[in-house]
Image (cartoon, rainbow, N blue to C red; front, side, top):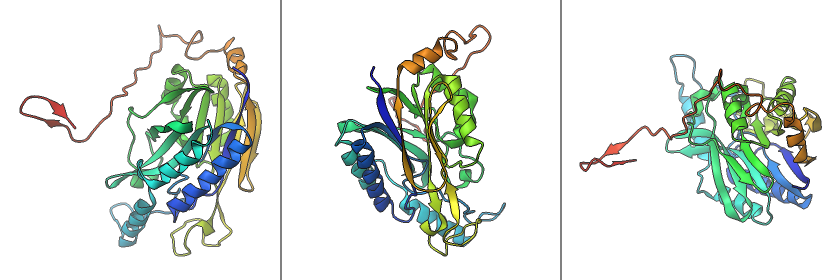
Length: 316
């Protein structure tokens, strides 16, 4: 396979207007494809927003009315998989043969999920991944994904998968991705700490894969002045400072980290680097010890309601 270009988009979402945010994402898709990017990765919760600093009025043992109002507003900006926001992005992606990975807040009934959407050229939305384990206070507003949405997708650019934010600290999930032969490991995140990049370098080395990590550059003025924010109310307060980067299978940083602005970062992927790296370390191959360690993964969907008819047939 020949070399090709990839991009990570470090941009602020528009958390109060998911359609405007989808239009912004479509513009970035067109910009990146105009620069010949074949794989484009956006941050966690780009569509729908990452509510940094919002407690949703929920001290232990209490739910305040204003917190319920905040959740209702957040639910309103979440997207449906068959909605107009996803359709708009699919339209932009269809103009090229690019593969796009973008984080969103997905609504399914009354529950919200932190989800990654996978778009590919004219095929449109081809797969999703729901975050398995929301972190800390995220559990208040996001449901838990199950093993049925952990795709590693064959593409002309190699096998692509996505692991969201602190899912990247789940060793067994990483091993599942390596076992599926992930070549382009996408890591949409809201972690902008100095410790994030070393983790991405570790994963690149561990999996002998390219890692594309994208985080928002987000300021307080993206939200209404009366929105709760524990980080303060000054409009120019930076809630998420970015830190997006692209790392090669040797752990070398090819682009980023960028901490000061919205930006699109580019790098060139050479698929031979993946094979060259696995010469001496293939964590799911010759360097594994299945006689000692094994991993069992349940990829069945877990639905809360299963109907059993009189005929004994099961249906959802």
